[in-house]
Image (cartoon, rainbow, N blue to C red):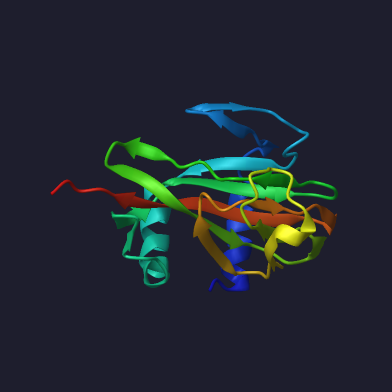
Amino acid sequence: MFNSTECEQFIERSHQFAYEAALINTGYKQSELRLDVRNNQRVIYDSFELADELFERLRPLLPASLNGWDLAGLNERFRFYLYENGQTFKPHYDASFEKNDWLSSQLSLLIYLNDEFEGGETIFYRESGMLRPCKETQLALIKPTQGQVLIFEHQQLHEGAPVLSGRKYVLRTDVMYSYKCA
């Protein structure tokens, strides 16, 4: 979906900023550092221009409506993720981003920016009522390839498996949907 030049430009753009330890969401607009759950690094980058550009490109892949909500665009908040040797994001659900009562994210959108690493797969699990799923509940294992796009509902249990060697770069944002009263 994205070529190597585009992916390398995203990586270069991310390094214009200082990577920091990635936090986890612990409640409405609350987050904290939990290295036992997530120990990768991230850069937060806000760009309406990039959101509009990527939305036009990715729109054909996105559901026009979802759960009674209509497709509205991409969240202008982007997160560049960097995973190095041993870094992981244990099983979790992605939080939604609510701009207001009528505009909320429903889907996570990942763009894998490189593939010169070992490990680091995205693993999806069947709902088991636990955040410690066993291998038997594994639904899918996605081995990232450079330029690949992965879109999924926030409420899908998943993890970023540990990177065994190399560096893994990901660009993440959310797909926004609007609700219109009749």
